Image (cartoon, rainbow, N blue to C red; front, side, top):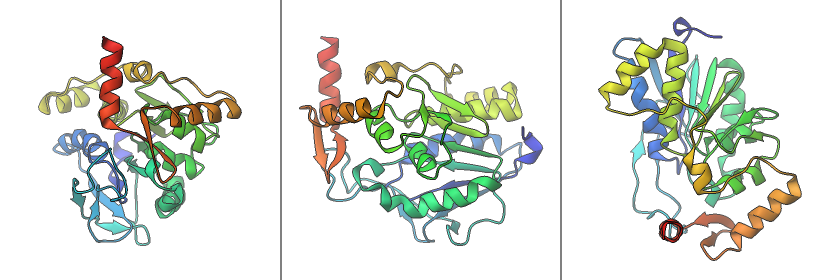
Length: 268
């Protein structure tokens, strides 16, 4: 196991459509820690041009294509930092597009992973790890709203449905979006100790969850651990044919309006 002294170079990957909170939530605890721990931090993207969180304009009834933020990479996939000790992979809206569009990111992660000491994915960032073959035979988790799609596209992973985060060796995967903060705090606790994690959490006034099995969203989305391939396929088809789902480019897209309707109906 690597120690605090071994972690000096931290990088994140970004790609068009990455989720802002996936990235920012995971980075904020590290930013607080950096006041006492010397880090070199890098942002690696397809090019040095700003990378936006904006979704494709053809995507409807989810996030407005005009709403988004951009981040400027410090390095590119073809010219990465010389050393990366800890790699962070945010998720995003890749479930609305053919997975092949993420191939440059997948290739970079696959090439880089053998050199890192730790990797942490947030939300559907685990799909990038899975497509790179890094999660083959490993335990992992992902966003519960996209659970059926994740299992359908990544069948070689031992997916854990009820988990805020999962650790298998040097691979950390977290559940959806905000779960990246809890996963990162857990990683900080393991590497730098409970006191360091507590101070960082108190500075940003975050009430962290320290139990990796805490996952009310697994219940909300009725997710289950993997079943045989034919059952998973049937589940995906059943969800896609349900009235609360839109299909965009033949991909699964659960609308925000309907998510609210579903929860209101359950509460009544």
